[in-house]
Image 1 (cartoon, rainbow over the protein chains, first blue to last red):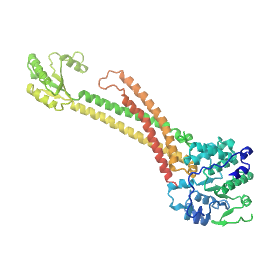
Image 2: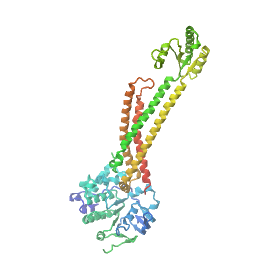
Image 3: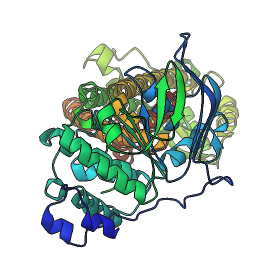
Image 4: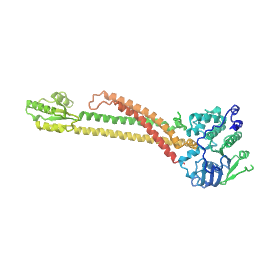
Length: 263
Length: 295
């Protein structure tokens, strides 16, 4: 947490950065992993098909260890978003096995999905903020859904918005915020419940390069605090700037690149 | 406060704006139908209580050849019936009363003096003597075999059938209105789910159960249903008061006063609450059903 005080990458105003700003520590459920704690996400020969069309992904096999950081890279339309959708459970594989937090997606009942989703934070390129809610209410949404007490909600959300440099925009509606600010609200919403797994789909796609780099630093900070991070992007420049493992989606297959390739 | 918070922008739905109006109209009609049911029941009770245990004995003029004999016969009959333990009261209808009864048909002049009318004795039995009619019949037959008894059974039967028909019709109308209200709420809820599909997806993604989303639709439907219900019931109340004023000015003896009892007003007041509850439950079940079909 002290790292956050020292390195806020320009999001928080200096006065706040020097203050006692810290990431809220609300954890909704004890973080229970499978017996094999080395694996948070497991894909085994996974295929993805929409309707009766051809498989856009086939034979995808990889694992993500807790606390790891991966870029999910590949050209537009390669299937990066589909892989993320499998991970946040809005899509089921057409073949193979997906295992999240020790649970096979195939054996999951619909009732069990919300509890698992509370352990996953998702950031979208188009932010997907609720336009009728303020920044505070948007960020508070996961906590309120989880039934956290309102006094705790306000405290933690305010602190987190301060941390991402939006202390002055707590009551602002998304329409009045810039793209970078909206993205930070979206990130705050994704991490407010301290997820075990953070998935980001082209999070820097709608912001300029400098803000994109700042957001990456933010993801790295979260990763250093133990969150497993997967960032889907086709921005090779950004990928080359940060030395993390890559899941490359090419020709409908997924290849794990443990050392970043030369750009 | 937290209970009433809505994450979904349901208040801005164009599809839901007309819901209070439709619910209002339905509640208005349902309240009038309910008032008709209660009114019919009230009329039936009125007639039933007035005629229950009451009958009239008609003694034709041929039963006595002279006026003195006639008076003696009537005196004996009244005396005999009065002494019976099953009888609560006996009233001999005199000539003036008979003329008054005929006045609506024959005018103020009535019948010529030489036309004799049957004599009427109105008997009211005690409520704890259900077999009193048979006993009276036996007693009078011994004195005047030509007598007839009118116990209003047929007339009562017709009237009961009529009021029961009104009650049945009103119940069918209320049922149809309820079905239409439920259908409307289902339609509005499904439209809302469709409009807010993207928002619902986000709320799902951050870990919401279907029941969390259903609760928001439930509260929204309850709010709209209650607003429409209150307006409809209020308007129906004013209509009933107006009708009572208009009908109350007439001199009709057939119908009892239309004014509702306190109990009946309270029953009408329950209508908007019942409609809100129906809207709530319908919206909740619709959301659970529709979302349950998704992944």
